[in-house]
Image (tube, rainbow, N blue to C red):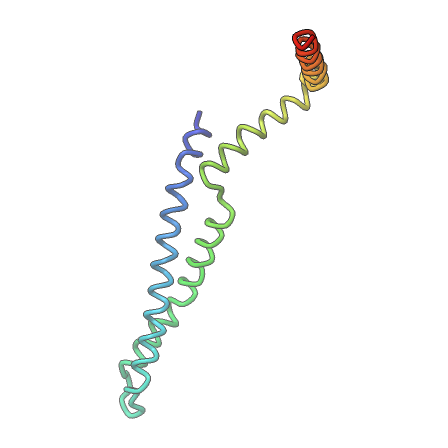
Length: 131
């Protein structure tokens, strides 16, 4: 039962991950923009200019942003949606059952024979009605 619960939560996990990825990309783009804007204000005589402070902060958090982006991309790529997970869970279990059950292996042949007899009976009825 817990499997079905987590399958129903997959869409929420993917949505939250997408939002986190968007925020991380917005922060990274803002940081790059800040570096571009403040580099013109760089003063070589001032020991701690705005550019140096911003650059130091960006370099300090750069690896964390990269890790968050890569983590989010991995989750979005490899975690199936709710629909895909239900298909995997349902069809995968059915296929395993059919492969292990001898009676289920004989079922397709029996179904084909039954359909053949049914179609033959319909053809015979049509021929009798046309005469």
